[in-house]
Length: 249
Length: 365
Ligand SMILES: Nc1ncnc2c1ncn2[C@@H]1O[C@H](COP(=O)(O)OP(=O)(O)OP(=O)(O)O)[C@@H](O)[C@H]1O
Ligand SMILES: [Mg+2]
Image (cartoon, rainbow over all chains, first blue to last red; front, side, top):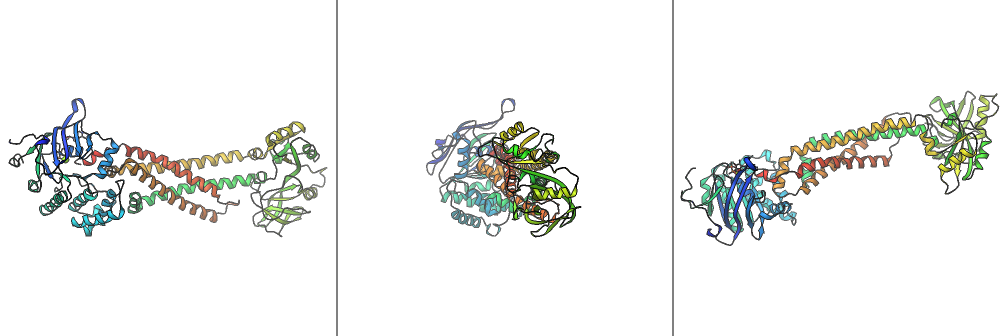
């Protein structure tokens, strides 16, 4: 093992850190049945950086990005997004954070079954307090075009293939121009070519628009599109220097 | 379009069936209450729509105008009681008559056109003011037609059409007291005098009818006084009929509310995954609750519109034998009540939505 635990200060940065995770721990349950899913994890991602998160099943990847995305509250530790301290937020503030600053692509591409692809995008656009219907319609059509979904836009998820659904979910995550994009296994339902295309699109969004992106993946071939690689094993987060990526996979 | 309405548009069958079920229940509520209202009106209309504040019966009448016998001299004694502005005699009997629909029962009322006790609700024409003129609440009667009392063959000329003036579910004809007395004398030549059944009292302005009613009973021996609403409530059978219908209407109402409440609870539980996802993408609980409210409101509006059409059609098609009409106040009241209570039942759904943990949306499965 040549990986080592990284303190936020050690991170190579291309800009100021927009996301800082400091000593975050998450324990599910209490007493005998308590499970520590994340133990004292720290990481820092700068504006315009796209990082990947690798780890075996059950290692805590989803738990970590759920806390970062304001879906889960850490048991201890601090999560900062820009000037906001996510780990201190109330439920209501977290709801707003998710609506306005976070784009989440869930592990199982979760779409609203009775809305078309386009309506799935438009719905999230209506969530932030300030929104414009016209701008949303334009952005939805742009995104659907970039994701190769223009002619599938008016289909409900039932009529879409698994890969198409995954792309709609990505479009939804990008819809509100979030500061933070969190993607849980985007390529699971996609073939290699399409998977590459989708990951490239994500990387481009992050780079061009100066966002911060974290992608959970099993697919080592996708790592080349990311700036940093983190690995989780049994809840312990380490930064990978790239040499050990194939160990244990 | 809001997500609530989009969903209804995509799931037309589901929401159509729900709206249909609710429409049938609202229909039942409206139909039953309209019918019961009409039925009670047909029992009580003649008393309820009487131009008087207080009615006086004989104390032996057991609260029933048809069991009451008063000597005509009582009218003057009642008129002298403090608080009484004017008093007029009323007489009534049930007789056979030749009606537009054929031979049938008729409640004949005699009253003094110059005194209290005239029927309200002249829909057409006027009240009688000469011998053998009559104002009637008889199906099919028209101004200028004739109703013949049997077996005396006394013809009454119809000069007025009344509405809401039936009594004991029988059609009624109002004549002046002399014509009434003549008709009864012709049928019973041996009767020593024709008694009155009641005295109608108009109270002086500002006096309490209930107080005047007991004042009359205390002052004039052998009498009992009633306010109009009291007299209506004591008509035999009225309270049990209205109670029975009240229970039927109430049960139907409760069933409608429970159906709507459970249905939306089922819909909510089925959609927990979607609601969890929406919470995870940043939708607030309040926003999701509003979408439930929008759907409940939409269902109630559609169902009520259908129900009103159904009731209207049913009342047109049904021959009930008593005059029935749809009361707008009743319709609006019923629809509002269904809506308000449905929203209350929707709170069950909203409680489920409140308990959602958005983090589960990120879980692997
Ligand atoms: N709500 C929960 N309650 C209790 N334990 C949980 C809960 N959610 C996750 N866990 C446990 O926490 C650990 C980490 O789970 P997590 O979902 O983060 O793993 P993961 O790395 O995303 O796995 P996968 O690759 O299979 O998606 C697992 O042991 C899991 O069983
Ligand atoms: Mg996971």
